Structure formats: C-alpha cells, structure tokens
Amino acid sequence: MSYPEALKDRIPMEQMRNGMTAYYPPCHYCGAPVRSLTYNPSLKYACVACREIAVAQARAEKEVDKRSAKEKKLSTAVKRISKVADITPYQKGIEYVQKHLDIPYWFSSTEEIMVALELIRRGVKAYHQVKIFDYRVDFLLPDLKVALEVDGRICHGKDKEKTQLMRDEVICYKLGPSWQVIHIDTENINTNVTHLLKAIRGVMAYRERKIRTQEFT
Ligand SMILES: [Zn+2]
Image 1 (cartoon, protein in one colour):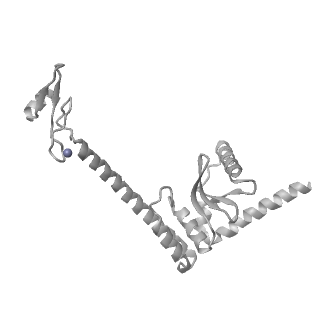
Image 2 (cartoon, helix red, strand yellow; image 1 turned 90 degrees about the vertical axis):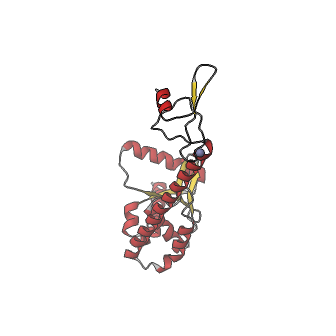
C-alpha cells in the first residue's frame, strides 16, 4: 500500500527497470530525499548522514545519563559514610572517584564507591574492575594479595554457591597460590564501611587458623 499514500503525499517516485517503484520521501531532519522501496506515511525517514548524527546523539545522551546515575551513587555513598564517620579524610577519594566516573564498569554501585573511598582513605593500593579470565573482579589489593568482591545478598542456592566457588577457584589459580578471594556483603559495607579492612583481615586470619588446624590433625 505504498503507492496511493506516496501519491497523496506527493512523494517523488521512480519506476525501476524491474517494474518496482522507488520512493524518495524527505529526510525528517534535513529534507534531503531518502531512497526507499516502500513508503509508509507514519515513518520518519532519515538520510545516512542524519541517521549517523542521531545515533551519535543518542549515544552521548546515554553517557550523560550513566554519569548522572553514578554521580547520584557517589552522593549516596558520601551520605552513608557521613552517618558513621567524619567525611573529611575521604575528600581525596571523593575527588578521585569524581574524576574517574566515566570509566566503563567502574563505580557501578553505591557500595563499590564506598569501598573505593575507604581503600583510598586507608592508603591501600587497589585496582578496580580487573578482568581475570572470563570474570571481572571488583577490587584487587596487591599488597594483601586479596581479590575483593562486593556482593549483594547472595541467594543461597546450591548451584549458585557451586558456580561462585568455581569462579573463585579460577581467579585464585590465575592470580597465584598466595592470593585469595574475599566476599564482603553490601549490608556490611552499608552498616559501617570503616570496618572494611578489619573484616578483610578477619577473614584472612580465620582461613590461616583453619589451614593450621588442618595441618595438625
Ligand atoms: Zn538528513
């Protein structure tokens, strides 16, 4: 049903050798004729150049949205920390996070931002979102030899636990025998992020004791 509509809308047409009709509706953006083998009056036609501009614009808007979402998370992180600690020593970290908000995969949750701020305040060397094999580790702490994962409430299904164990094993294998993966619950981070390092060291000490006990028995 292209032809009658095109005729009605005075769309330029061209009869092709094979008997088909080519339509030239105007580009919605710049008015240049856009070649099409059908014509639908309810469609917006766009020439190649305008389509590229529209795609680039949509992409830029998405980036802006992403940034403002991350900015919101940063301000939530600052608010939560302010409830349990003096925010002044976190200033350097806040500036760092602000400067690096646009990096893909970085600072994707409020809790990740809180952990980053705490690590920076404590002067703990860390790498964020490190790709290891097929996985992405939230934080690598090379001085502690810890791969730190910030987890939401884990659904304690047996399959999920198995998958996570396998994932942790692969990460440890890739990093080396003295490394370990430590999971910190988002709830703990939100309650009091200043306890983060104590919690990490606690897990490390617990595992060491466990290994020693196993050696003696
Ligand atoms: Zn155009």
